[in-house]
Length: 302
Image 1 (cartoon, rainbow, N blue to C red):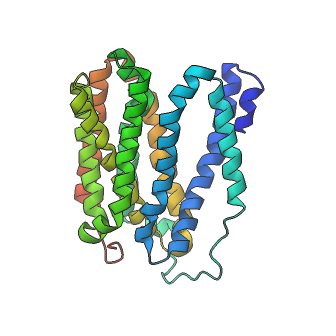
Image 2: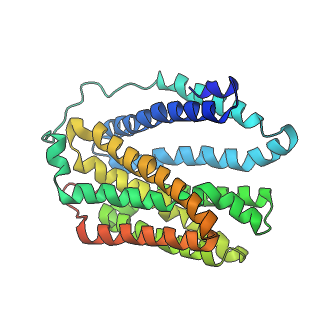
């Protein structure tokens, strides 16, 4: 689907290409998450150390691309992305489902699982948290350039955030064992709100800006690892694939899309600062919901 970007460059065609690509890409991600967790079995704490390799790849790309683009032009981005997608597709042929996997948990129907308040509030909190990221993912680079920062500096700020995320993933299994998934999940939601307040208020202070990027360890790394852990235990057995699909679709799909769309209007009418304050309110709402309703049962602690 992504190769369609070479066909023509009209807005309508690009919408079709990106929608088609997004449909299949987002359908594959939760299945791969479930496959990874099935292979890990009871050793789910190792998930974060597997996931950190994706973050390392991101750092390499963000740190190297600005220099390459300045020399060869932005059109190279499409070629690089397509090459990476082809490489990912080839590696999927090397990954197989866990043979003779057995599910110890009682497999309930999806409808019965979703009737539990803890489950649907968990999914709602995830969607709100990702919606709060809309302004950051859409406008962060523009925001920094508007405040006089160079493109190279902006690239290093992205890399700093993901480097913090890698560090978090490396120690996540220990944190999970000491504090439990729910405590870490609610902490991540709280720190998300704090991060957007900082970013909206002190963007001109380089030191504070760097600290806000270090918060990415919590707002993505801590959040994602804890959420994956909770979803894995709330959707037992053969429902794991559906649970991960709901988590991915509602948070990164629906939440991310709505956050990006609404942040565009907010950025235009309210300005950058108020948009990040609104994002902080969304994150705060997700934190309150998780604090009141998301509970940790006997199966969730590592």
